[in-house]
Image (cartoon, rainbow over all chains, first blue to last red; front, side, top):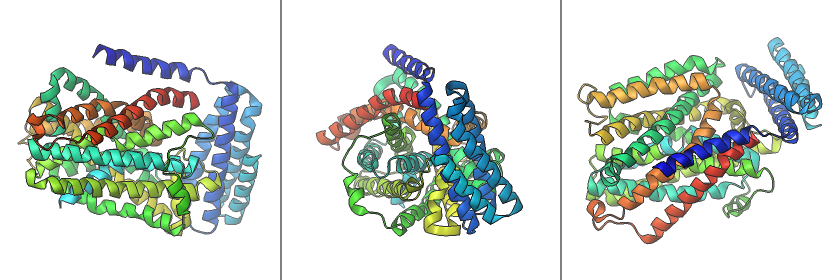
Length: 124
Length: 400
């Protein structure tokens, strides 16, 4: 029983220690991956919204989720690895804002255009 | 009807928010490469489920009941604390999964649905019987076959899927790979499922003559869950992977159904997620009641009226609001899910090793004891999952 308690404590401490030691390279890589993934998500969602395959409420949800996640990623990247690391995230976030505006207007063509831009910004 | 218990256990314990999330994550990030983890885990969980059912058929003990009797109260209290903590997190993840499904359908913030889902869950357990819970989950859970249809529709490269059944190591993101592997194993070995299955067998008054049916039920039920989980991995690999979409939220995972089903895709994904999670949350909440009632020797049965087993009813009445509160406070149901699945892998040996002891004890299972190969296979897989979990949880924190 005592061994189990010590073991649980060790796992918890290892997790905490590991959480405190993210390198700037790791943060930069994660920021780039998050930007690419959300860029692709926004692109797919907006394109399918353009062809009426997903409902408007869903695209709005995806855009909100993307903006929240990207905002967090941008903040983490800026704090840990500087403005350059946060740049791809910021670029995709700005396209997310453009998609949100297009969805609000009901402008499917503009949404698709913004989606393509989001994907190309993310892949850069 | 007896096979329904297997499918209900499969819908809840196997095919729940954890399986859907980890399978979608695995497919999007690593393509078919992680199918072998599902294959090994499924074989193992089939063996474990069959053992839990056989124990109930022969000894008329549920798993928790027998563990408390055989291993003593100290061991049981450790199991109780561990399972209480993990089950509450899993319950939060399942309630969150239903709320997210409703959010996907309506666009309304998922937090608004959490109390409604929690109340519906409590009301169904309070008013329902075991057969309603079991048959309802089985019948509605058949909708998850939509993942299989979707995967089929995409025309997957079967030879690649077959190749992926052979264990392999990742070429990139090793920490993420092993964390997802642990999550998949954790989603399969949810400790609550084994006790729920054994308790269900006692609720249904299984006896020696049901042993062959128990075997069929374990294989068919878990096989059903495995086919659906494999389909999710493949569908995610075929639809999300090529676009470069990683699954960081359920909104992203939902996109996997759009390519095969068009405008039906999002509603179908939401229905599959919602029903699977609701079935699972019924089981987790009930299992918490079984855990306390069987451990402390209280009256227990979902078939009794709440006033006949008041303490049993009190446990789920308290657990459901706590689960709902956790999802409101912790937020992000997907993060809760992936973390709780890894904790499941850590907890698995605590319940699996006593099960192996019981299944080799003549006092409980008489001549229906385990074969050596089954014992060795299950022990090895569980120890490996446990060891990977020890490493993977810090690695996941490290890797974000």
